[in-house]
Image (cartoon, rainbow, N blue to C red; front, side):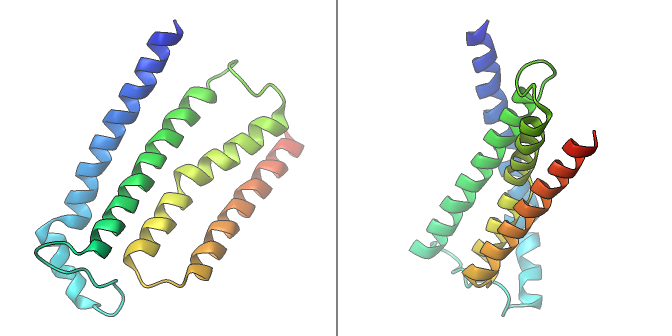
Length: 146
């Protein structure tokens, strides 16, 4: 039973990763999307055309790891939050939901923006901390009220 569950989990992570890679390429990496980058050239981090530089390869590699982390977090959230599986206490379920949602939504978005847009590291850290605090606060309120 556990073997089948783990295989399904790994297959779902692989399929999510492959589909998000294709979606990222369609909306951000294809030639028709790159022509719009010229409208605000001072916003984007400089990426060399042709043979990618070491910086561009590092950014792409980090972006791939963020995407893989998103897929793993989403699959684990979906698996763990199934009814009756874990987190019987409402507070732990609420905090698990807050952390999972933070890993699934704002973390990949903000880190990916930081990779491609000229943000200061402190701004990125403040945005990440702000979203974690918002989600944790919301989960504590919901846990207390319900």
